[in-house]
Length: 560
Ligand code: NAD
Image 1 (spheres, protein in one colour):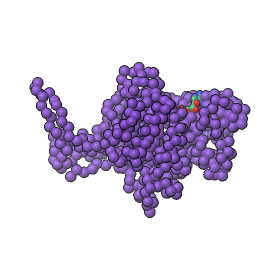
Image 2 (tube, rainbow, N blue to C red):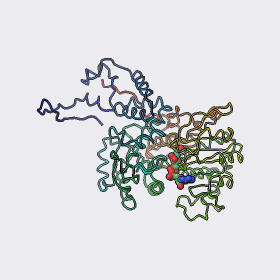
Image 3 (tube, rainbow, N blue to C red):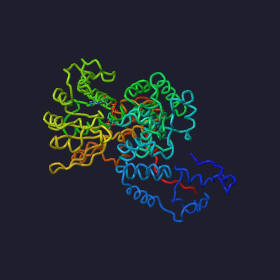
Image 4 (cartoon, rainbow, N blue to C red):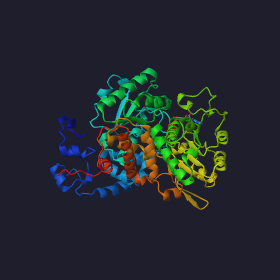
């Protein structure tokens, strides 16, 4: 980064005069990664020549935090809190990360789901200043050259979206940029990936969202989405360019429409170090939740039957990882797949259907059709119901009551985001199952009091997995991201859930322990990288200290 020399013309009494070059001190004061605001010490103010550019009192970071939190909490809407935090990040990155890390439970729903969804919907309207990179379909032939405009050379984590399927909100085009930005701030806050090593990218290939195209403030290309060969050529050029310009970076595909998400993952996963969080990260979070739920029910994975509502990226990703875990536990691939059933918008996914996309076919079993979820529950008798459809209120009272009739402790995961899209609320799940279900959700729900008992819904937040996984891959210099890394991440996450969490029905550990959780996941992932001969860094004797030493801590540097 670095502010660099700034020379500009400014009007002065009708004549033009040249503004002097910014001093090093001024550049530091205006560089969010170096700025300390009112915390510059007396000596620093003299050495950097910034005395007088700040009010006289020197504040500590802790005192600055008090001001930040009081301003933050004074905001009455979540979107205003989001805008406030982005503003802080733009001014003083260290203070932003200190605030985020110390208040992760409170701020995670703001910098990430659900508020980030709201922010994406308003992205063009709340636009302040650029963050990350935009590469458009008009940039074919010069993508590598554009990536070289990024001021940081040592990028290790890239999150890229084409904005087609933002959370459960659909096509938000270039406005989807809020997602890579939010995810990368969690990589830093939750796992200590250095902010300068993170690069959010939006591939703007147009949008099929008519409202956006008509919006006079929309920031993206005002054209229909580019598809087919042209799309593939841009993606191919981008992936190759990213690898060329940032050879040590992990590439995370994020919120692509499912037609492209499965294809891109299949195409690139064996060629470079990449993964798709919507497919694979979600899967690991869900599998961890299932492991914890089984500790409550006292059953084994091999005794389960899973029914999914929604056969898209999340659903198929979760099923594929569950199948890997069941195979690791002794089942054959076919037996494991037969434990997973899907309902999509046309009913139960069965062999006789002729309308199935490729990714659903491996879960199309010989089974009579069922027109809807309730009939499918009755017919397949699942032990666990997993909602990843983006369709709100689809886990109806009869569905949950039926689950509770079939199972003493039904597992009900309503994972669709944001909150408005959840298949059911926490209160509905606990009350309709008479407190019997083990519930997890995609977006946060408050604890529920039901018949004198307090239930704490676990949030199957992808942020439990991807930061630690990324840290493990980066620390070991992983050349690929494998399914085994996701499977081990799920186990490492589940191991962090304490008995007292389970006692309230909570299947995930507290978010406040995220950095410790990420470290455990990173260790497990790095071990897989070494075991699978995919690491390019030598295996350290003390893996934990080695990884811990790489984790960014937001503390001010000294300039004296
Ligand atoms: P997707 O578009 O790939 O898949 C959605 C699927 O739902 C499709 O198969 C579609 O056919 C199906 N569907 C649509 N309407 C339906 C209906 N009425 N009945 C049954 N099925 C229907 O999207 P995705 O990436 O799989 O995400 C789905 C949802 O899961 C989103 O809301 C997303 O926010 C959520 N999600 C949650 C987490 C999490 O909690 N950690 C992670 C990833 C995704």
